[in-house]
Image 1 (cartoon, helix red, strand yellow):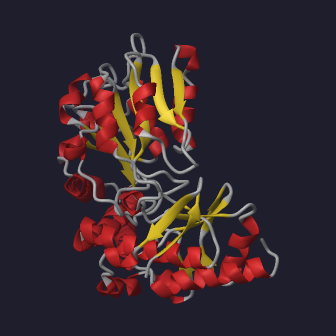
Image 2 (cartoon, rainbow, N blue to C red; image 1 turned 180 degrees about the vertical axis):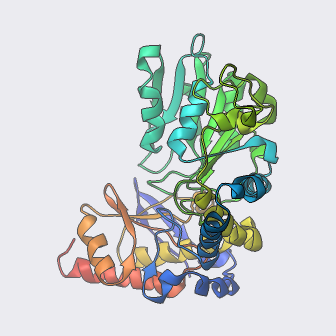
Length: 404
């Protein structure tokens, strides 16, 4: 099924769900996610659905805490942290030594930003479609002479590579931007962005929170210097757990000014008088980790590893294209990339006042989200074509009743 309809600045949107394999066999995992027993859940880009594996992992953590107390740290939990770094590395084609674990993207950016010398290069390039945390991190450093440049968007959907080319110069220290924009689902060409930045002597930080899991990611091929992501969304690991990838040959020059005891080379020496960093990305970690969150993410990652990034991408893209097709047929205006290759599992449907629509959908048993000027729907491998139609039908009903 394909269709075309005016969208954005007069451009036609073409859709073709059949271009991607449906992978309906992945619905065998649906029973592992209790939320689907009573709810149509299409909001994985805000919070991935809770699985029985994640619940089992958290229960294991609590049982060990209850039976072993602090002894669990040395006998088991430090090993789980090492296992998590290994699995994340395998997912994005990095080594475990290039992976640091943290509690949030904000804290991970804080560590990275503290490693940068802004003396000769004081310019940070980001975009006005990136998540606010990115801008806040460096705008707050204006007293250090840091200048933040926001590359403008095109039609609230994407940012042209030529615009990056013009914004990045010999004063640029970092280019910080998203793999997938949270307000349009647009998949950026991070390899091309890295090439532009490196040609001009700048480093690249990629916020992949909306990408990792649903979009295959190879940090070696992309050539990025840092990549940050976490469990909250497509990795199905819940809150309070993120990771930083830092390119191996960059590590020796990274000396955070906001270190914690997990960042020390000999952390169990408990030496208060010296700071000595390890040779690995552990130097980017800070304080004691939330082990319950580690167990939660290990549970979520087990699905990602079993299914594989390619199948996840194809299944999600199939559902996304189907949803866009149905939305267009119903008269809605999707805020998505014109080229399906740049679309992800995030579909924004333009709406002047989305809040009452999202509220009404929730009351009817369908969970989606909203962002300024749009209802945001995000199908994942465990969702169905029927749920896409339920969302569209409910929105049509609300619209026809004068709710929008």
